Each structure stands twice: as structure tokens, then as C-alpha cells.
Length: 464
Image 1 (tube, one colour):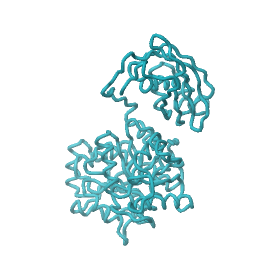
Image 2 (cartoon, helix red, strand yellow):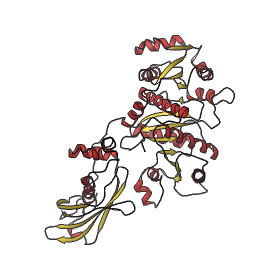
Image 3 (spheres, helix red, strand yellow):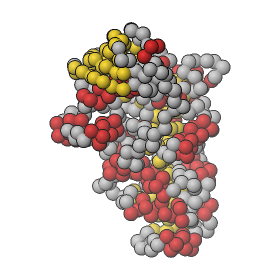
Image 4 (cartoon, rainbow, N blue to C red):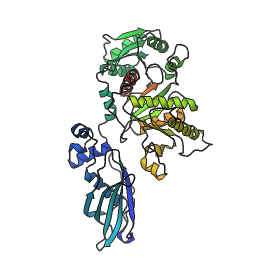
């Protein structure tokens, strides 16, 4: 970052920043300011006054500070005076643009700045004046690092767990829970009341592993088979027998479970292509993010992608996204015949326009930056209700989807759950490396998705 010296700045120069006001912003501002007026607090505003929360006026005013401190004059600037008049309120989820313009230069390195805050579309929110002292010499920094701020770890996933309260446990066939990790995840989901497990595998091994983690298995059904490799077929059979409403993978390779789930004769196909959806709770990201398909369909063709998109929309609606925004990803946001995924993306968006894909706003092709970052979308001139705000990301192939999801887990510390969708029953296809929490969250997804499919009812307060 480079600060501008007073002598280098000219009257008429301006600078801007764009921000989306998020519920997290309102919570952080409440902690920092000590202002706990419920009109500004997510959850409290809806409950107390029956409307969406609005940003405190001084949250809006603080955006001018961001422009002055970061851009014009930039590092080294200090405030002297500010007056503001507010004309509109900003609700959570709205984007605003804060602009400062140099009106006058005064002795003592002072700058008089006109301040203007607008919503998208030019709706005026705030006007005013600021006086700042610019540095006499340029201030150059190598970049600023501040400690990461995390609000309510796993808070978004906790909403899903809370939504499952009161639903009867889902009878679930667990394929080969023969190690501490998979059996521990099953136990956690059982204690939370999410599943009523049927443990399918070698009984002696299951009991030995249960003893290690302290689970006495009292009242738990065990379906004994000779080897772990026999477990997936028996789990699918339990579904057909009406004894299980879901399948959970244990200590066994995903391919073995999927082979029995997807086989044409005796499997769990339901007329649509089966696909997998990762659901991620990413620190700093406003809502849950869904990524598909990163586990089953390697190089999906157009019609397979249509099923993949519809499956993800169904799950998104089941977990509180009434009309999810779906971004079809490619390397670029323009159609290029040399990149086939851009053609597929454009066709899928048009299929949604024509009702062949239902229940969501779908756009593509979108590159990753302009799919999830509103400023990147604006910079590239993309005018879309999805760009910059995508809830669901549809990868062009399994490799891209898998790398994206695991990057977010291992580099961005995202919590994750996952579910196989499009089959007759939910299938929890967790990785053998997943921890108990990932298995627990996958079970919550299965419960909510299963309930939504049976009743058409979403039990989660709307997330987006």
C-alpha cells in the first residue's frame, strides 16, 4: 500500500470502495461499538420488530474511513473532522459504494473531502464532509496483516443441527464401521438423534472397535456379514427391504459403496443421474457454499450436468436456500468454443431460463473469482443476479470440483459435510480421512434432505 503525500494530491481526485453489508459485519460492529440495538442485529431484528436488520449509520460512515485510510490519501492519513447526513438505510445483503472526492486543499496538509455513499443503482444513502491530514511524505507499506477474526465457529452448520431437532432418527445402514473414526462418527450422529444406526459388517470387528471408543452398543442393531466388502450390498438390500431410509459409508472405499448404489439392477437409482454435493462452512464466507460434483461423475456430459445441477438445487432448498444462486464454473466467464465447459455452462443457464432446470437462478459460464466476489464481477462488467453471490458452484469435472473443495477444507479451514443426491435415499459418502464432525454434518444433511424429499418442507430458517 502506498500513501499519497499532500503535495501530490489534486483537487477533484476521487477514490471508492465497494462493500456488501453482511450479518457478520453487523455482529462485529455491535461488539466493537457496544451498540446492541436489536434493529441492527441479525435474528433479533426479525424477532423483535419483524423486519430485516439494518446497518448502524456509523457502520456506513466507517466505509469513508476505509477509503481515506487505504486509498486517498491512504496510509499515513489522520482524521480531523467528519459530518454526515443519512438519507436511506442499508439492509444486510445490500452492496454499497463509498466515494470520497477532494474538494479543497488547506494549509497544514489538510484536505477537505466530499463523501457520498450509494447503493447499487445509484440510490443515495449518505452525504457529508471529511477533513483529513495527509502525510507530508509518501508512506509505503509492504502489506498489513491482522489476526483472523472468526465468528461462532461452525455457526452455519449448527443451524442445520438445530433444524433437525424433533425429526425422528433416520434408520441408517452403515457400511463397514470397522474403525474408530467411522464408528465414532456414527455414534455422534446417534447421540445427536440424527440416525438410528444399523451397523453392517463383521460383528466381532465392530464390537472390538466400539469397545475402544466406549460405546456399549446397547440396543443397536448389527447386521453381520462375513467381510467389510460384503457390507455395501447388504446396506442397499436393507433399503429395499424397507428397514433403512439412508446409507452411510464407513471404513470402506467409496467405489465399493457407489458400485452397489448406482447399479442398474437392484441399486438405488431413481431416474436421475446420481451425484455428490459438498456443503462447506467457510470462515469469513457469509453463507454455506455447495460444490458439485467432486466425487462421482468424472467427465460429465451436458445432460449429466443438468442432473448434477438439479440435484444440488434440491439439496440447497432442503437446507434453507429457497431460491439458490447457481454458478456454472469454467476458467473464463465468456463463451469460447475451445473450452467446452463454457458451452455447457451457457446451455445450462438457458435450460434454467426455459424451465428444464427448476428452483434456482442459474448463470454461466463464470470464473471462480466473479462467481463468489461481487467486486470481481463488477470489474469484469458482469450483470447477473448470480455473479458474485453464488450459493452453489458447479465444477466442469470431478478433478476441478475435488481440488476446489479440498483446497477450501485444508487451506481455508472450512468445515464440510457431503451427500450423494439423486438416489432413492440419501447416501452419506464421507472420506475415510474425514473427522467425526464431518460425518455428523453429513448425517444432518441427510436428515434434512430426506425430510424435504418426503414432505416438500424445509425445516431450516432461510439462509439466503
